[in-house]
Image (cartoon, rainbow, N blue to C red; front, side, top):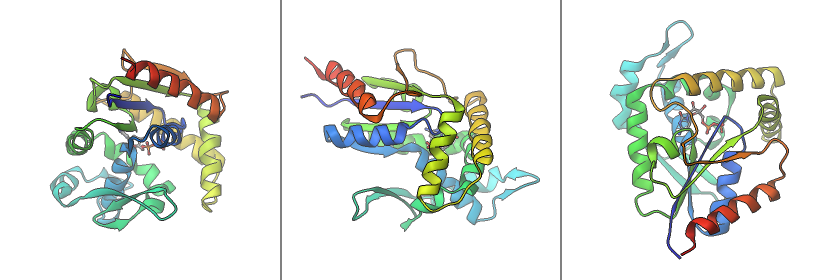
Amino acid sequence: MKKITIAIDGFSSSGKSTMAKQLAKKIGYVYVDSGAMYRATTLYALRHGMTSKDSGVDTTSLIAALPDIHISFIIAPDETQHTLLNGEDVEKEIRGMEVSGWVSPVAVIPEVRHYLVELQQQYGKDKGIVMDGRDIGTTVFPDAEMKVFVQASPEVRAKRRFDELIEKGTPSDFEAVLANIKERDHIDTTRKESPLRKAEDAFVLDNDRMSRDEQMEVLLKLFEEKTRG
Ligand code: CDP
């Protein structure tokens, strides 16, 4: 069967990562979480004092440091994918609220985007990949054979993220999670460089009231259609 490229884009906490991971596993494709790459870059900026409440992100220093930021992925013994920043496993840290609070301002910087998009395109050069993010179907892989745009209401998404944080042992405030989601939606959709928007040829998956199994059924059907013949 011919290998294709699968791009899954959507709003923050719409469940794209879980869906993309499950789909990749089911069809034997590689999964790449592009958001984790923006998150790891943000963690680097935080650790190197490149953010301040008053003046925001120190863009000049971050751009100069890009060649020193190496991001990769490993499969942990429990079979989950972990993100490495310069060889260090930062999976847990990049999911916390501090990184979440800074990631969208970091992701608006065009040089950061160019750097990471190039890396993402390298990952996908042999196809057989599922990548999730905001601009995968529009900028990273505009020629992807299968594009999915996932949406759900901000409240449903905040509830999912809140439950996930609790499950990971990070006590959180629901209102703060909801506010972060709304703020990221705003920054992600209004930024100049590669804003989050549906690719014209993307399939819209509204998963507010869909179970994971129902969702997977829809995706597998779409995958079959795209790889047939
Ligand atoms: O929290 P969630 O899983 O929805 O987000 P994520 O996929 O981890 O991405 C975190 C942030 O990185 C997003 O809010 C975007 O600001 C940025 N991002 C982006 O700009 N482009 C991508 N392809 C992926 C993420």
